[in-house]
Figure (spheres, rainbow, N blue to C red):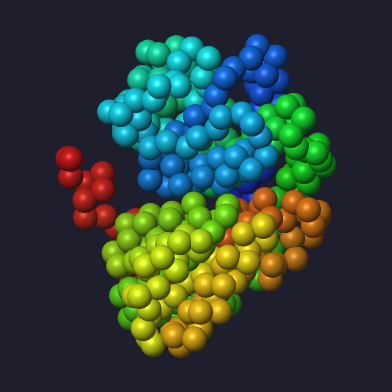
Length: 334
């Protein structure tokens, strides 16, 4: 039995997200048939970072304008292209994120069609968007829903071949990721034991893993473990941040399987020349039975979320620091 791991809940929550496929496809088809000009992927903190892989996918594959935006900034800065021909997607585990809720109100006032993914149908976000697609409570991450949405959208536009095959294979994702978690657990425990007293980590990732790099650095290591971090995109590493590396610097590298892999390989090669504490978490190390080779790169954020979920649980154990402990977030008014 794995530490802090509820297997039935893990499988059930993931299954509930991919079970949204018919609703997502029906929604996308209606939007495409009616026509719209641009798509906004709106989030706050982790849900903002989790939008980046899908902005990245759209940017490299589609001529449709798709951009990720920070909810709070959108409200104060606005966006000249946001209007009645726009669609905006919001994700929230709790369905109560204040910044996102205010951004929904802002978008609706401009005539934007709003979509929400959450696990709570009675939550403020679910109640305020034009359409809410509901998974099981606490289901995370939202990558499956976003991949189905963007995949179907690009497919309808003739910009993504093989969507039906990908969507069919995503039905296997609960079992696929369960095997990932089991395989990762030992290495996760080893990493945590070795870094029990490490108070600073340097994180690097690129391509569709840059969002996860940002998320793990800020939302897990900083927010949930109160550890100091630096996070940098692998393409930007050699433009300043490399100067922070020393012989004992803990460097965490997230490596995927898309076209940006070579950029991260370059960072790994350099980092290992300087630091004796470089850890690479590579999605290529996991079989992903039932997933076709051409889709592995798209699933990198999901795979690493599962791998690092095991790391987080073991860090919680060795550091005796609950992942739920907060000093300020949703504790103080700000």
